[in-house]
Image (cartoon, rainbow, N blue to C red; front, top):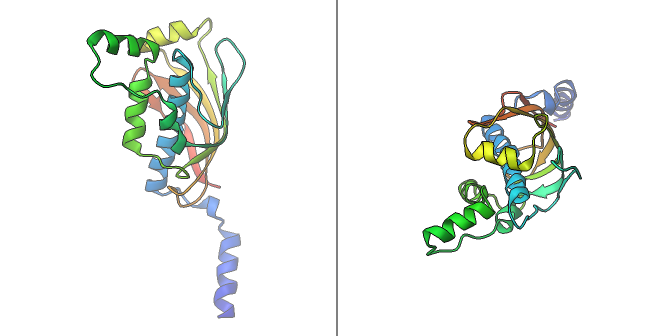
Length: 191
């Protein structure tokens, strides 16, 4: 028994958990969590009135470049998004889309992913490299017209929670374009 425990300890120190490839299941959950957090914070920022996700803070620039998250629980996000009211006329639907152009997409995404409290907690930063001269208005107009230029977003996050087998470190650069978020430039590894 002592030999088996000694052998296991030697293997553990020789091949730490961070050397293992992230499982497919953990990768999919982590990828969705990274994108969902960014989507929810963006939806809240461009909405009128604005709403904010718990554990998230934006830098104090005209067009924020940095999003800092600290133990931000995705399970709380859906309750922060303004609820859709039923039986709306076409004018009321249009008015609600103008006030929160990403709210419906964000709500649908969070309903599909079904995040519960404690499933995923994020800590770290997102840092966007906006095009020169960009404003919130021009970026929203480009996104709605599906003419959104590519934006690089530096990501340095630690993900923890019940939906992944071990904490995951996410580093690298995500690219946001008209087609959505490209995560090929991100590295996912166990912490």
